[in-house]
Length: 484
Image (tube, rainbow, N blue to C red; front, top):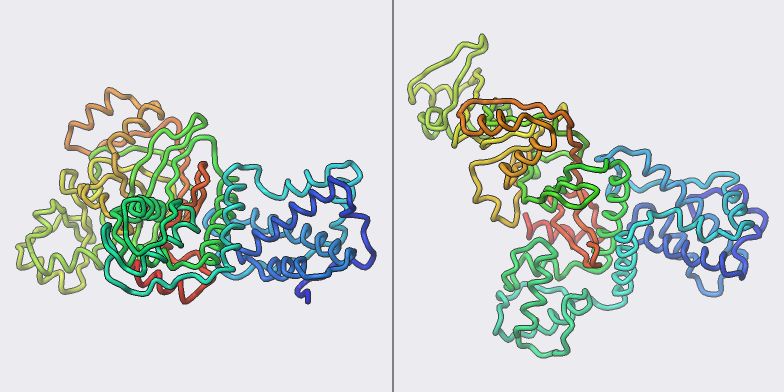
């Protein structure tokens, strides 16, 4: 039964979807698009429509009506999605409610009369290689729904050389997901299986140690439908975001913990990053780098003073001096207390402003990349380089810490036509220096927790901010509790 729609033009059969090659190709393509959107679970209308199209013994006229309705609903979905800004696409939240417009058949009628109906239907989706690969991958995952998926209940750690009944399930799952191409079906964890497990771990952002522990098991038990929805929704999100991108830009993919500098010639710079923890999220947004700050000082936000620094001061009254903080009162006068007095002050209202001097201990490191935004979010260096070796790097208070910040700063200085002699001289000083870029560089902070690379391999990352609204709620909660 069809619900949620009105279609004023559907009372009379339309002369569409005839048994001619162009219109048959259009019908096939439209059905594939509906299957993809049904898997994405962005609107119950797509799921209902796709189910009805696959009903047995469907009359020809009814099939034509459903295909026309599908075309109109996809156009309406694209229109609604395109009107939403980066960072507020609505995917993963409340479902899209769609209405087919009166007269929506005319674009198809015109295209059919010109023999380019399939072309018109294909224009509903991006003409991008990765998009087509993602759609194929989603279709494969949905076909796996016919199988009973292993639960991968808790068991001892599985390591190379072990023998355990769960190894049989491990091989089977990795084979279905494209990570294993061997033929063995026994319980022994051999070298071939190790390589497959490591491949699986890498494409899920895990440490590729070959050990099957709780985090690897959480991803192994993710049902195909959950994987399909995650990949389909994020593919739509990427399409939505990329339409707003400039030719050259910095891209921060928050769940991937990765920054890239993209140019028309390819990737110019890539680096691991640290992003905001779930309670202090790095926002999805569009901004731009306008200035480089060498040897920055750090004016500490009040929220960080209360949440992070006061507990440290209460533990050690010498903390402020050791970390080279300067303290100011409300009148802007510098305040100097003994260690005991600072401990007492930290237990009260603490009506002071903190600024950390430039230096090796400074939380911003040697560089700050100043961005235009009202949220006090920026990119910066960090003295805690060891944190980049962690696989889970949602650790900051919202700003993005960049590994290799020195190289990025030098490349931006060159690209932004900064006086390089002054810039290089400032790097050796201990004083703060600002350098304005003559050509600001756009920065896009996005949230893509699943994608298909150009080689066709699907990658997934932990949904650190719970933005994806996974279809299998119980499974999603189990994955989050394992990961968090």
